[in-house]
Length: 179
Image (tube, rainbow, N blue to C red; front, top):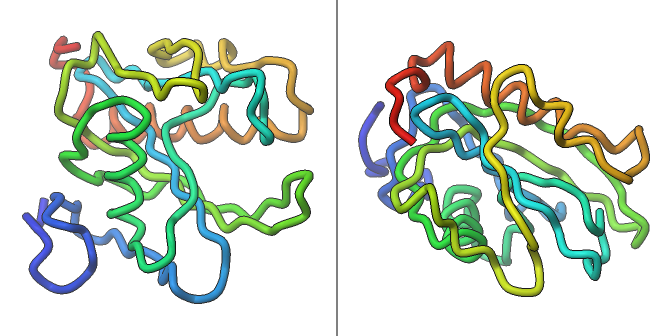
C-alpha cells in the first residue's frame, strides 16, 4: 500500500495500492464505479437488486453505482459501500475491469470496477432498503451462482467477480480464514 491520499488523487484518505490510476470523473461522461468486496477467505460479496430497479431488476450485482457530480471515483466507492452495506472502505487493491455500456434508458455509462477491502461486520451487511433484497458470498469456482434472468450478454458481473476473486488470491488477500 502507498498509504493515505496525500497527492490529490481524491482517494479521501483510503489506502490505495500503488499503480492504481483513477479516471477523471469530471470529463463529461456518466461514470459508474463497482466494488468487489472480498473477505479473508477470498469470497466476493454479491447482492440481489430488488425487482423494482430500472436496470437489472432482480439480478445479482456487486456494490456500486453512479459517481455524483464533483465526486472522485474513490469517494463514490466509499459512499456506495456505506449506503449499500453499512461498511467502510478501507483500501482499493486493484482495478479489475473497465467497460462502456448503455442500458435501456439510452445513456452511455463508463464503468470501472475495483477490488476493495472494507471494515465492518461482514456477516451482517446493512442492505439498502428498497434497492437490494438478499446477499451471498461467492467462492472461487462458484461464480455460476450469479447467473439469473438477465440477458446472457449482460453477464459481465460474473467476469468482474471472477477477476476480483483471482486478484484477491494473487495479492495474498485470501486464505487467512477470517470472514
